[in-house]
Image (cartoon, rainbow over all chains, first blue to last red; front, side):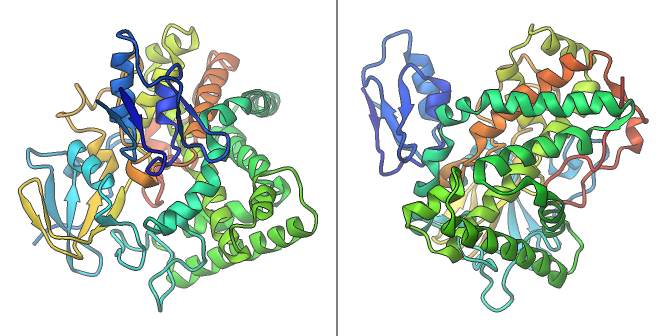
Length: 62
Length: 393
């Protein structure tokens, strides 16, 4: 399960850049939108990378 | 006695030798006022401090780390204009950033690609028509991001001579405080007039949109637009010119990029890491007692994160001193980390991807027109790069 905290998110776009099939950004304030909260096995590595690159700590995997 | 922050370079690409990360990754250095601060050269330590809200970005708490690196109000220590959100902490910072992030998303920036390609093409055609030789900085690297950010913000490009000069003065080391303050105030006056005109007659651009939202005062809008205008052209301009120099000094890798054998997306990340143009790094101030790399940090301690050193940390990157454009660089700190991570990074990436590849393909025989030792390096500027890049083809 991916969790995204839009109160913490600063809209840098690292997740949408790294894993566009899983993360998008709000048109209003650029904060993260989860396209899915359950990544497939193939997506897991790239999602882990996006979580690691997130500058604000808004993303977690659990 | 701890040394001051080293700034002299022995070659165009490597940070000062004294900045090399050691096992501890943290050491003492002497600030220009004679007091001691902490210099962080370790990638994980730098990343953890940048992510830690217990380390403040407020300008009134921060000291200068090199002689005259920032322009501040003498009385308060704060920025000389309102709205400079890079010098704030949450929640104040959040109020500003939230107004802007929707404008700089990956999707929004991707939509600018055709126009950026057109701007790049036009400048390269003009360079081809008037040369060889040419100064790549004046013909290409500076005007392209300047025009892009002007169009995005809604700043008249015709006024570029003034704002480019004032922005360069404010970022130059060694100018007097008075001279720097005058440059910032001149820029603020220019932007105040522009905001006033847009309030009367809105146009279709980012500044008019911010005015229409009504969340920020006109005084705050001056600082916001100043940050965006200055950051929007100084940083990318220097990456384009210094990146081109790096490509010319690594011709086989440049050929692979030209032929699309190397992914330009990957190459841009590696150039960002290798060149790290934010050469003096960023400073934070501890607001709580803690420990970093085994050192006790007290409240009020000045902590300088050296981005060039962290991006060459051998604990993080294999062969950090080699440029490897095919190397899948991940996790560099060239855009920073934490809540202040570069707002315009997705725009910068697109400008670089289009800029480097189009330049290499339009000029397959591009070469330096002078010996590399004759290229004037920007060791005297807050943002590193080259002052001029004479090229031929």
